[in-house]
Image 1 (cartoon, rainbow, N blue to C red):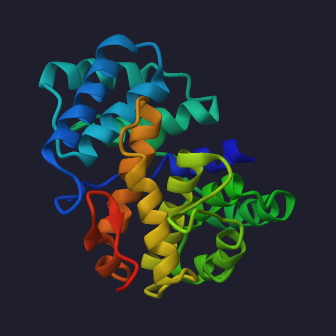
Image 2: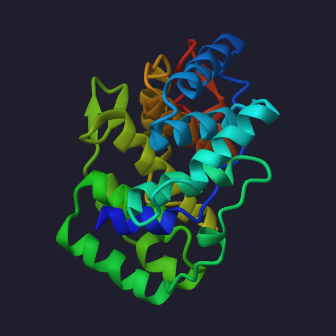
Length: 254
């Protein structure tokens, strides 16, 4: 089922973020180097290339024109009959300038059928990892259809684990937690409402993400940046995410 969600998410796109308050130049440079190294050493991994290019875009870093052309060719030659490959190739081409894959841009999505698949997926597996993917996909549906998923966010939040009264995280660690927060806040933004997450909980989630900013893999770095970008740019919890105590602790008193 997650492969079907990958297929739908293949038509989404990333956006640049601003993390000035708690993200310094050293952090940006460190992750930029990580992503750039991946682009030079993992040309045979479409997933790694996706995470690296999308991560650089989130950091407002642009690859060279020559590199863009080479990566676009890799995306175009990917086996799009495999849904996970389709997801990564679409995301990669979408975050490269002037890179179009006709088989993807011309595809038609039956959103009603996909809504049914998401509902079935939630009933079959209510784990944090699966719900995170479901909510991210649901955020790409129309507002009325996505409303039913927004109303069930509490089912995911209730599974979070608090650590030492400082952090909240989901089973699965950084990637699951980051993906879950991205899905929750994306649904909230679509609905124009606050999700079923208290400010204290959001502070603890934010603290957990910021405590993990020294990641070492392109996948972890991408999911971390994606979640932090959603936190920094959302309209409901901005006061929590930009007010810090110590270098990487969000203030729970707001």
